Length: 303
Image (cartoon, rainbow, N blue to C red; front, side, top):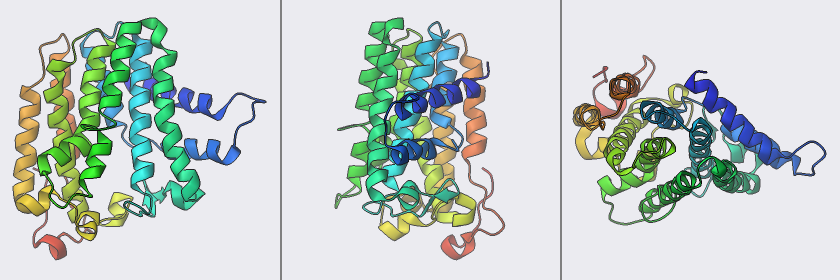
């Protein structure tokens, strides 16, 4: 079965569990909001990386790999729901449709994000019988990369500080779940997680720089969500620090380092190919209707 099918099936199963069995009472609107928050799924980059690492390491416990991929994506989707809320970005759209708080209201959006976070850990717990020690490591890794001091909560917290360490901000806000992806993929297949941290950190940093570039150069139609949010909210960004062309050069350097950092494993060549493919996908190309010239004085070509 293709990795994408395994990921989608695992996520769908998790959501079905949270929505309750037939005849089991559950709040219908919140149940609907859970499905709304995870579909359509976008590129599913983080669980795809997790599954690719697991496959490269042997994938001898596929049920654990599937659960890990679903749990990671549920955490990511929860973070998007919360990020879009009025207390943070106040975004009207996400993935080309109304954000959850616009579609369901703020109370249900908050509960949706909370429920997805809890569901992520339930998914891992349900599959723990396949290998309790690996499952415990998966729970610990996901918790560390979700909360404080090194997880996505810390990343969001940096936005409330007067002085921001850009590297720490990027590693927590975006890099944390990419580190979780590479480490959880290794753990699910019985490998030590530490050698996989650098790969996840580099992919995460590259993704954040690319996201900063897209935010500065694309319009809302191209992004499927509000554009120019870094400037509007005064957030730190690679574009503000390096300029457009400098950020593109920085992105290329990061991706080159990511390929070099792949640990030795049976699927090393496959992983290198995946990183190259992600590099092609990540590098922004300003659409014809983007307002790049107005914002930066120059367009962007594929690096």
